[in-house]
Length: 52
Image 1 (cartoon, one colour):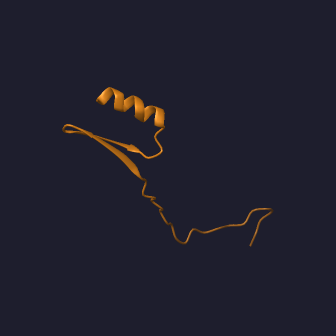
Image 2 (cartoon, one colour):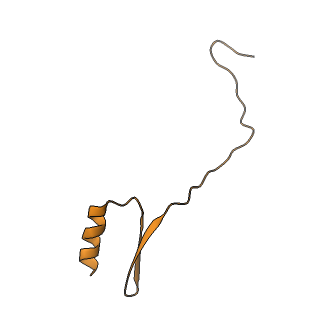
Image 3 (cartoon, one colour):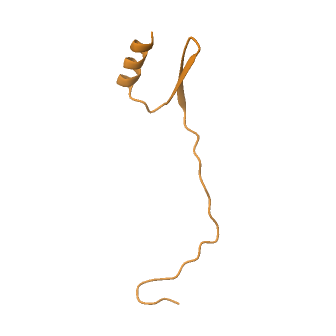
């Protein structure tokens, strides 16, 4: 039954969606740096210049 413009709703099931995201992993020596694949190219190039 509604009251005015509102309708009472009941949550019957909750679903959690976890989307696996692609990553870029850079390994230099014993160090690993993992970044999301959406990392800007300018940031990646600057990071690589600093690491190498």
